[in-house]
Image (cartoon, rainbow over all chains, first blue to last red; front, side):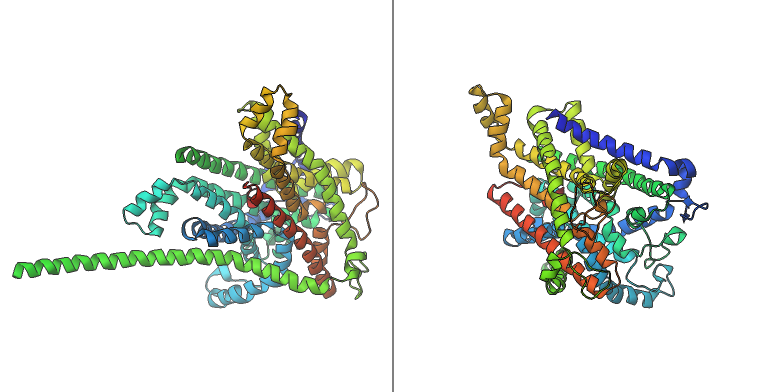
Amino acid sequence: MTAAACYTLVLIILVAFSVAIGSKDVFLKEGFFSFLSGTDWNSVEGRESYGALPYIIGTLISSALAVAIGVPISLGIAIFLSEMAPPKASVPLSFIIELLAAVPSIIYGLWALFVFRFWVRDLVETPLHNAFGGSIPFFAKTPFGLDVFTAGIVLAIMIIPIVSSISREVIKAVPNSQREAAYSLGATRWETVRIAIFPYAKSGLLGAAILGLGRAIGETILVTMIIGNTIGISAIPTSLFSQSQTLSSLIANEFNEASSNLQLSALIGLGAVLLILTMGINVGARLLVSRMVKVSAGGRE
Amino acid sequence: MHENEQISGNRRKIQDIMLRHSSKRRLMDKIVSALAVVGVLAAIIPLASILLEVIKNGASAITIELVTQPPGAIGSATSGGIAPAIQGTLIVIGLATLIGAPVGILTGIFLSEFAPGNGLFPSAVRLFSDVLIGLPSVVIGIVGYLTIVLTTGSFSVLAGAFSLSIIMIPIVVRITEETLKIVPNSIREAGQSLGIAKWKITLFIVLKSAKSGVITGIVLAISRIAGETAPLIMTILGTSLFFSSFTNPVDALPLRIWRLASQPYDSAHSQGWGAALILIIVVMILSMALRLLTQRKGFKVKASHV
């Protein structure tokens, strides 16, 4: 049994070591910081040069979009389910949200590639482009539907289940006395949420959002299918409708086609960056959520 | 008379202000409520559309040929089926479960029964299993590639199963630990008062009464790994052949869907939808089972939490 528990530790060590050893070559050749800040991605023999910056930016932008779209929606769902809906409605609704969590990301990807991107292109992107394309560089590129914007929206849909269900848990953990105090002062439902629930649940809700961010950053296959997969400096999005590339999508795209050991090492180096990014984010988020839920579980009794 | 009029005038004014103010507040309340409902719709519409499209496009693609034949030449009109992918998915998931479930359950038992309190070792195990849950699956694939594919020299079922088991273990650990924790202490004490050895109490009394919770954890983990694609790219590679041995590449449904979707042929896309329908049916059956398991025992596990 202790052996089984040790296995978890061994796995972590294995992850850390293998990623470190696998990416050693590229860090030695490029140097740690110039790998992070480089924009080249050239696997031609003799001219090999690798830099991770465009993909770091692509990852951060698509995930930031996902959080900007997904978190408010998730908060709405959490508030609706915990404060507004009668049990008759909230039970089936939360089941539906759980189903959304069960859909594999490859199926999100398939749906996004063949169905959803046309909705986005025709209903959102083209009107925005026509209206503001000339004046605001944000909307400048002619939209095809395969871009950071679509990736952000689909990632947002993907993180809704986890963010909303954790937010709901956190909101549930707010003591009822808080609500009662607000209602007894004549507050409306929204005022109760705003003055009694949000301040109390702040850190937990922040944790839920960050956890969603971690999910979005780590997501691979779905992003690979819809972000457009450009390489090098052009992967830095210049507008919402630019094709781009994330750390994980580049790994998925090139891993099996890597032509040299250095290219493989560069891909693993991207994995190392991704690992550090998500690990920091997840540990931080878990700390925020668990502190909140623990405190209030004690306070409710 | 005059004073009275003034007072009633003032009163009306105040009431007016209050009314106007409260109607503003009510309006705000209504707006926010409406926004919350919009949020719910924003989650339901994609789900409905996904299910609809998968069923619509998938149902017409599913034929006997699709589920029994290996893939044919790329782009040909009669392009065979996805049978190796179905077979491969079952084998890889089965093997991953054989590795992941025992390790996960034992670790969960260890944390709940044999390592009470917050010693250094159990806290480290808990923290690390939390870290494992948050690892991006593509990184786990890289680990599988480096540790197994590189050392054995071939893409293989083993490498895929090993990678998926890394995803599975922390999920099983957490749910096992949580389930065992809600088994009342009186049951353990009853065993102890009869002088039964601790391992027997754990195995035959505590674990038995927490059986459905533990199974829930395993089912949840399986439904999570069934749809994983990224780690399979760099471990099992994908092939159009049936399973031959544990040290050779195999195919898997998610991987096949990805490859089919990136081909420029309609027939490939249609097969992709068929594969997606099969995959989603498997996953939905698993989550229905999960629902039933968790409802019967009044035991709460949130699928979306892990």
